[in-house]
Image (cartoon, rainbow, N blue to C red; front, side, top):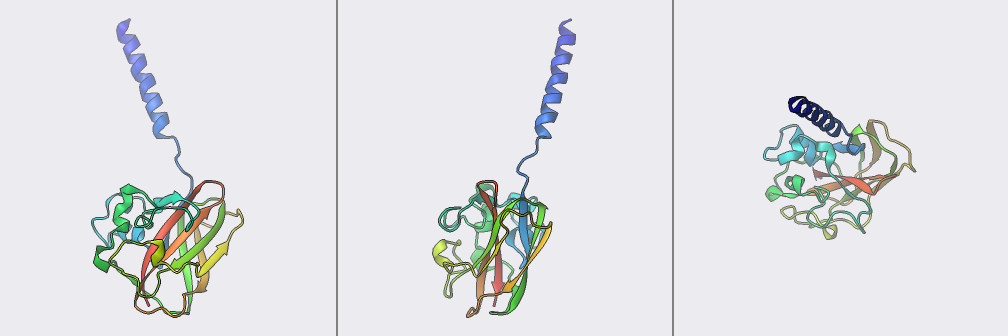
Amino acid sequence: MPKRAGVTALGLGLVAGATLLGTPTASSHGYTDTPISRQKLCANKTVSNCGQIQWEPQSAEGPKGFPAAGPADGRICAAGNAQFAELDDQRGGTWPATRVNSGQSYSFRWQFTANHSTTDFKYYVTKNGWDPTKPLTRAALDPQPFLTVAYNGARPPMTTVHQGAMPSGKTGRHMVLAVWTVNDTAMAFYSCSDVQF
């Protein structure tokens, strides 16, 4: 009799464990791949020593409300997540950079593993003279986004392209910060792309 009770308890434990493992987590995830983001460079193995983000490039999720709220300065690219801190490491300004042209039309592309009701997408760029060897801060960014795409609660397609112009008056190395604000949660997704004008 005690043996049967032990087997039953073990069986219930396995069922409970399987149920917990199968519980879905956040249902919205995404990243930019044009211009290629740091998390996608890690997932592609173009850049090494990336830690956990290489297996889940879609998970740089943090509080929304940027720039008034959101991740702390120096932790913006990782969305404030310590487990993705490699995204905030400037690596001496050596992240691979996408070549772009100042003031010219560009197709900004997001890839989603799960889409979600969306408030908007905003794109920021670093100021002229920013230091590409230091982690990204609000002070390093132009204060206004150079492109805003409103969604008003709609769900974007699993591959989403926003057509816009790269900011004018930029030369040299910069960073584009893309922020996807989820409509029906307190969260947003952050994606940093190194670019060369």
